[in-house]
Image (tube, rainbow, N blue to C red; front, side):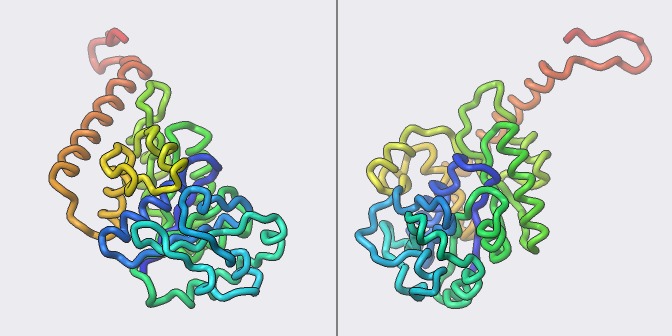
Amino acid sequence: MRVYTIASGKGGTGKTTIALNVATALATLGKKTLVMDCDVGMANLELLVDFGGHRRTLHDVLAGDAEIDDAIYKGPGGVDIVPGGLSIRGFQKSNPDLLRRVMDDLLGKYDFVIIDAASGLSKEVIVPLALADEVILVVNPEIPSIVDALKTKVIAEKAGSRVESAILNRVVGEKTELTRDKISELLEVPILETIPEDANVRKAAAMKIPLVLWKPEAPAARSFKRIAAKLAGERLPEEDVAAARARVRAERLISRLMRAVLEPGRKRQGDGRREVP
């Protein structure tokens, strides 16, 4: 069983959407997969998907009032879902340390467990980070998101977890955005995938259906499926490979052009002349 914690330093980066869609894509690949909403303070996974009525949540499990099997529900595409509770009272009763027992109970039952962690640096964030085989950071192409992700990376490493990749989400392509290469350099990890800003994400959320099922050919859905294939070690379709390579080449070209504009030419060696900016 591989446990991936999807984390970000700040809210609004899109990590819950990523966790749900990547987990669903893994399930469609035939992998037994569970996605767990561990944002016990601001749980919202169940707002993105309709998996039928439920009575037990992770809040009940972390309060000692239920077993984890009581809070697992079958979601669309065959993915299993553990929702978080929406009540403040349930949050107050929750003990994040019980997550360790939950993970022990899940051992051997799944190929993949995808944890949607809370934002920030509280205890309910640190425990899901510590339980992961690997932490995947979710960032937006802007400085505040990167700064907060760096803090999360430090906390995860202090908790003994590996942070080996990041997902760049909600990319529009504006000149003011940080480039893929620059973000990778700042975080000191490779970018696993770049996900474009896609209006279909909001529409799928309104329909309460994961985007990879509702509109599988949407740009963001193709990115989610590529992430799942990489985590599962599956071979990507040739057209996706070609598109991904073309996208990386385009991003690197844009990065070089932006550096040429924002960092005017330096003094040349030997001739005392400057390049024209």
